Figure (tube, rainbow, N blue to C red):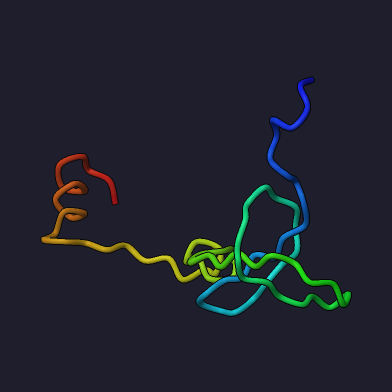
Length: 81
């Protein structure tokens, strides 16, 4: 392999903006923000809008957003309940 063509793969912390939950993983993502983790080390901090802690599918709070009765129209047309 050619040297110096791959990005640095290192530990980073991802934090959910909604819940504040965070987890440590490895990534090539970069950030100017840092956070001190429970092991005493400082890691780059990547803030994300949605993780498994806040996504409606994983939290069990899914809902169908129906604009102008489109779901009922589909159900009448194709006979599904």
